[in-house]
Length: 575
Image (cartoon, rainbow, N blue to C red):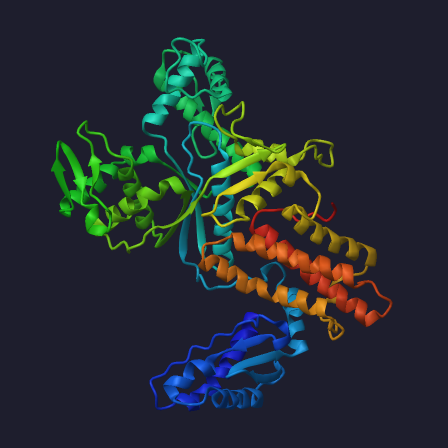
């Protein structure tokens, strides 16, 4: 049932209740649900049972009064209404009203499911935010899939979304990167006597060192070109070149993954621009800090933390959450009243500290700012065994590994290797579970062309409809506005009902910050399509039935396209 139809029915109930509750302080909240047993109807409502006690009325008699009013004003929307048990109200929606979703999809096309509820409000979604010390790992991939899909959910609800990538390009890890590349540039390798203990060991370090010695120039998508000096003793040049090199590598990984960012923010800029120092001074001025044992502490217990936290250590360095506070102050000052961070569950401990710091600076930042979506780890299985490392990264599986493995031997029209299949599988799989659950990525499943592979199952539903349309070979524009009265079979009713759920599903997914619900929905919609296709012929001899069923196919294909596009997965016409 379409949201507009649902609201019409709620309005009918409210109108029926108005004279019943007049003179009382009751404000009935009408909730419509789907009966567990479809035989009971399309919609169930227990408002009579909720109001019976405060109104001191018999719930069944109250339900009869409500039903009488609803039926008197039902128009073409409701077919029947009856009362079950002690006062449950069950409604059946008119067949034509159920079929109206097809006309709505024809009218709205790619816009079907969208709303203006966000009213153009600015929202920032920060995700991936990897240290520029190596290739993106599978955890970053899960963040990329979740963050991009969540951003799209916000956009279809009318929000003005900025996707931001925060580079932790300051701190000890960057020093370790520079020392690692320097050691490689001097001819050392992992396992050698003088190889740094904290060095990065992946093959990519050797690649950076070789390009540095060759005096190459590299640049990230938003950065200035950096040219290597080629001097293995020039540690600052090695650092700058290595960071730029890996930022560029991560850019390429993200391009292969189909993820684009609107803005990149460097942690180093927080120090260069004095924003970290300004944040610390603001906290001191607010009286939320104290000194103990040579360190500066923040009174985070004032804001629900289990203990106060060190901000500035006795050696003068800041703890890791301090630049995070400064960074989020910039988000607020840039006009982002709503911010969502997609991060690994290992960041859970920083949430209370960051929020405490933001509250303490007295800038009017609300409690609970920012929102967080924390995801758990991803386990990769290939050939029936867990894969923990890749040669290039040295210690973990990369996003590029997953994409390439899941692409198999797929070729494009020019005979070149096509990574689209791999990207589609990785993106679909990585949002197909709630973020707070651990996930096992099975490469063998991603490669399989079977109903067990969810992305194949959904894409095949789209391709199957394209095949039907090609067999028909008619003008699809003629399907708009066709008579749908022939769509009366149980399978058709189920498919129509699933199509109508799409807009409400999008809203629910956003409310719960759960883009996994889009993947669930697409799998269910594909299931309804396959069941219908196997039960009914579309291209029947009767012209009116054929055109109605083709219109239903067209509408289903459109919703599949809309949902797949939202999560960054392609909708192939042939498979």
